[in-house]
Image 1 (cartoon, one colour):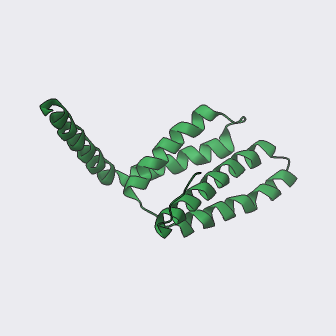
Image 2 (cartoon, rainbow, N blue to C red):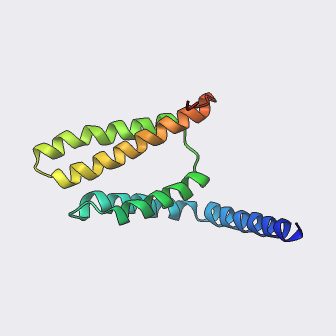
Length: 125
């Protein structure tokens, strides 16, 4: 029992240090995330999952520091979705596909943030 308590204290201390580090470097963290998303959307020629998942982890770390409302994510997904059609007309299908993936990601985030805010519980039968 003492081992579990010591482990919990160490994990809590480690999480506190991580959050302190993230708060101290929050601008750099956000810059890295935005740069990674822009590089994924524009520079890479193909859709790679191994690029998307580390960026999602980086986004989760950003979310620990910058807490946004669901409206912000909804607006971001609408803006990104509005870019898809012009890019398709310009024959930039890969860029349009990546932007639509990020737009869908932000739409799902907005949904879960709204669900969390409303306090509704999902019941699965």
